[in-house]
Image (cartoon, rainbow, N blue to C red; front, side):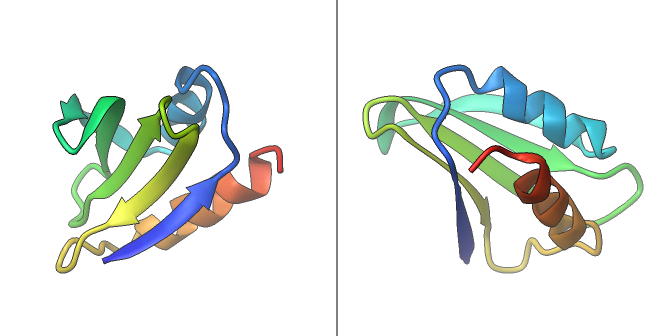
Length: 89
């Protein structure tokens, strides 16, 4: 498993839109029992393997990407780098 932090924002729809603008698509949006009140997304790329996760936790004021073991795809690194490059620090 690999994780990358992002600078906190109050409204996660901005970062979701930015990720989608790279061509990645939301496969699911849910919550996580481990982080009550958090929102969690899975992103994929049409026709490609891999799942990029994004979690937004307002209680901890934390937001991060995660790729679980065995879930890497050829598009993920480029999406992470592009999002981090465009995201305010």
